Image 1 (cartoon, rainbow, N blue to C red):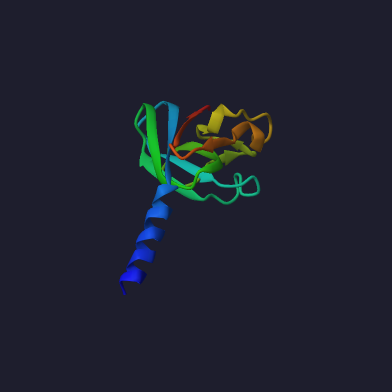
Image 2 (tube, rainbow, N blue to C red):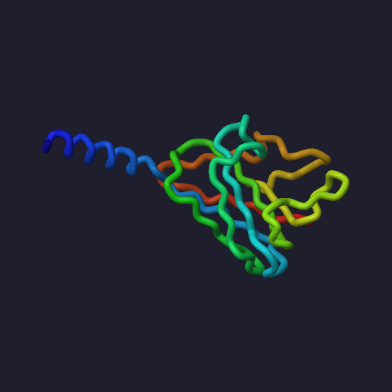
Length: 136
């Protein structure tokens, strides 16, 4: 029994030892209407399609820091948008975003979503902070 307890303890410690925190610093928030929505993507294949985790916080003008705890160190991307009407999704008009949005590393949109290479960043064992300033 004590051997089993030791094994579980070692697994717990090993799992928590590799977990890191990611802070996404969202800027250019112009109002307190609605929510700020940030999604983290774990692979290039998942980028803008299948998020690993999403955090939603009530909007506050200026800058907001959203902290994602317990990520495995590695490469990630992030998207952010200001869901001003609180409907839980990005609003589009003729394919163009109608709510402020941004991507990690301030990757820019040029008539198409940003390239993965422009938005990717590394989370190390000590964690990371990435900036995503919103644009209209």
